[in-house]
Length: 579
Image (cartoon, rainbow, N blue to C red; front, side):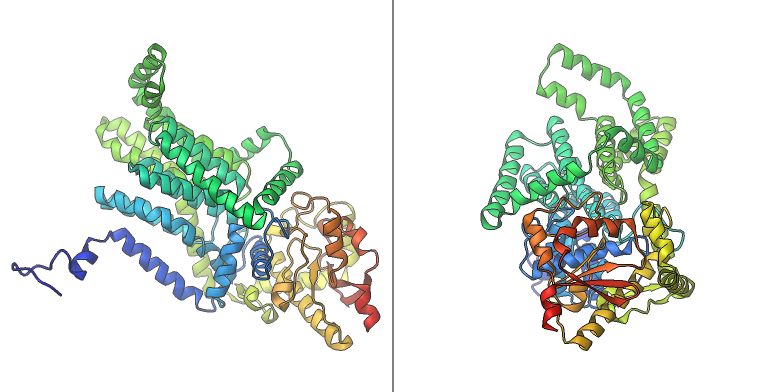
């Protein structure tokens, strides 16, 4: 190490360079190291609501590793980036717990745009940078949603892509609020918007609205906006020319829009009611800021009327109260399309600015503004931390779910009494199929929140193991080998577990009422060529019945075999004839 004549480290020495690195980068490096270690271990997580959603990513990743292209070779409920990242994660961390893997691989998307922004913020205020980074790391690292669908502690399998959208919007919002270097803004906007287009189209729309507002406020120059659009167009053009993905993806989006048509007002009202604590406090804060800035707002509005033009409009818009109102509206728009996630977390950068400027106000307005800002920002963070601590402490009383045949999908725990209840459910499914058939015939579930029920999710794992063992037993008994397997269920874990192929053209995350389009000739041909199509009966549900109806034209010649009381196998006739 070189030392200068005063005995201090040279500014070009390694210790001096390290000392100048942002503290926030050190925290990020530490978080990444912990993530890498944990993904290398065979961890178990407590089963939570809709845990089976993670199978959508396992299925998608398995298809990607087999050479399939999302939207081109299979119908997906969202964009491809999650499946690409999951496939990469499975190559790097083959022992990683699936839900942690899909959650943490998204760091590869959020960290590149975050690093230059957070470093610039730290140069101005280390406390502000750390204050922005720590909530982001909590939201990014914890597979927990703001909404709570179960009373028992557990992790959330549902809303994964909604969480990822808001985490990336958090980074984009931080850049739009704090960053002034147009080159950095170009990188962050282009990166974030491209990733969001490939993640979920409503997230891309929300990002577009955020960027449009920042442009109107004078934060983003026209050249930067056009360059970001050019980068996005270039990436998409490259994907289309090499894979044909973009056209197929847009077709899938239009199909999903057609299947999910509905009035916007009820969706906005539902989102507002679900997140009223955040939205209500935010609107009160907007009112308080508007009251404080009333005179200045009137003056800016008068200038717009006197001398209409972009500078006058930007001066009016570029105020904390307008930023907050715009972000609240965009957040409500995004949440109106969702049923779970980390709602409104991208308000944090705006709220940080508001709190930082609050000391300039008189005492009473300052107290009101800071209090309302805290009431808007803290509920998501406190809720996620609370549920995380409950899940961590609850782990002390959990035992592994007895599903060793499921591989990494079975790396799940729950309380013994819940596992006992799930086993009792399995016995009920087997002994009283007529009862569950009657529910399905009446287009009802045995319980309104059946899929969110933790006992059901544990029972589904038990039923899946039953299916795996039944397939292996049938193959051993008959000498058959099923090369392709499809389950007429929301998810299809069997190709991943048994290391087989999944049929092309079909939908993954198969909600027959919202995410399975009418099959075309190619889809029906792929299903007809599938070696084994599984019909689950533990329990019989109206959704599974509907999936069987959708694919019925392709299954007319398949031969029905009883694999177990929980599973009927529809076997390709050529395999039956060969045995």
